[in-house]
Amino acid sequence: AAILVIAGVMALASCCNEGSCCNNGKGSKECCKCDNCKCCNECEAPAEVVTEEMFRTSKSWDGADLPDYFEGRPELVAMKYVIPAGKKLGWHHHDALNYGVLVQGELTIIDVDGNTKVVHEGEAIVEMVGTVHHGENRGDKTVVLYMFYSSKEGLPLSVAHPEIPLE
Image (tube, rainbow, N blue to C red):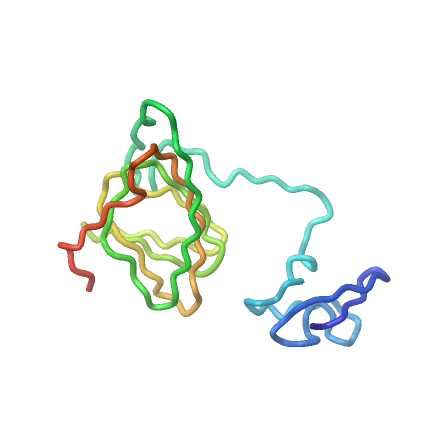
């Protein structure tokens, strides 16, 4: 852990490059940009509250209209997916509306017709509903994806299609 002096206040920071995080020993605020750096966000934090609408849509990423909500009581589900570099998710489809934010890495989504969507770090995605697809991490960085489902009790978040081989 490195000890930082920011605005006259001492703080303890953790970084894989000990001592290079936020204070490189020369008094400048530089961030090592490593995956484990806990203080980069402090260096780059805005002075005021910032809100940003990432999307407002009634269509999935492939342009298809989203279905109506289910009738009855909703079940909201939040999921975190961690996909190592080079790994693929199996073919599947979703019956429930779902969307999310890719917080790390780059994810490629492919439907059965070969259409692709590359989601980059920091981007939001509205998934396809009822369309068979799969995701791949073609990058060299682990993907971290947060997905939010508007489902109903007893409905699986995804339905696997093992009959379709991954290549």
